[in-house]
Image (cartoon, rainbow, N blue to C red; front, side, top):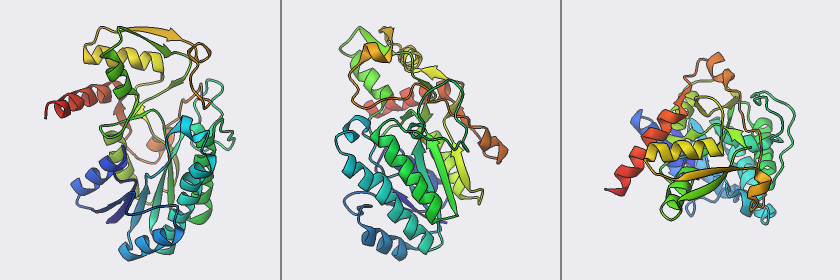
Length: 288
């Protein structure tokens, strides 16, 4: 298969390209500056020239707090940019896989959000823009996968694990919120699932995080320091006590992933196993 990957130099896109190539697919990775997804004509010409069988759309504005002050730019990328990619994919008959987020929900309650949930109430600009992207995909091409993910970490780009390990170098204790609950997602594991998906026609909306149950950011931080062998005292605090964030964060990021099994997809490994592999990978990267 010929597959275009947008945002190919990002945290997830890099691993998606690697996974595609490892399976013998032709991967066409694109990112800024060679392709600006806010330019509809450029997107159409790029997709037309390659004429891919599938497009995995990883490109996005993901800076959640900065999004609050840049609504127009965020919607240009996450909503209009996604519309351009969806139109171009449909024009050449390519499957489209769009990465979305738990932020499309209002983040209340304790019940896991189902993939086919119809009640959306995003609480910040980022979530609103990603929901607009979902709607564009849904409306413009029937051959689509919408995959909502949460708490992403990988070798490329910034993430919570890297932040905790960096702060541990200068802090013996850290305050971490304990009232926001979800599950981490390791990009190489996710990339495997995404390629599994585009090798099928099992279209629809899915949720994908690593297995291993639900935990708070506080729990995740404790696990990070345990796996890294770092003696950091982690202090649990509420979101209100922690403060700082400009954008509202969901308290409930629990995602129901049962639809993966129902459609024959292999779930991601346990998040603790993923964390262990990631910390080992970071260590090898530091010493290379």
